[in-house]
Image (cartoon, rainbow, N blue to C red; front, side, top):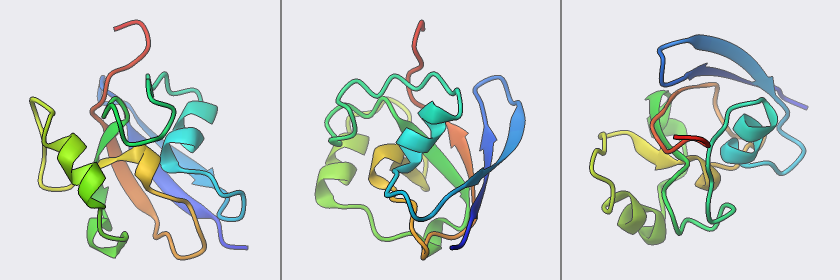
Length: 110
């Protein structure tokens, strides 16, 4: 089993190194929530709300292409980046590269 090293930058600029399993079928959103990040994830991971928006700062090009549904949802955001993704649509598998992401979506309590 390959672990995935994920560097997370929160909205305050704090950086944390995390290690995610690749064999549990988790999405990046589920892993971030389980790691204590208060991501809103209103739609529960269905690519319907964009509250789990992240900017992928490392290895974006090694991820699977975003779906049309994901791209359409990203288009609704007031601020989007060239490497924006919905974290609910990034599945953590053996093929997932190590990542660095900045949280850009809505957080609980905001």
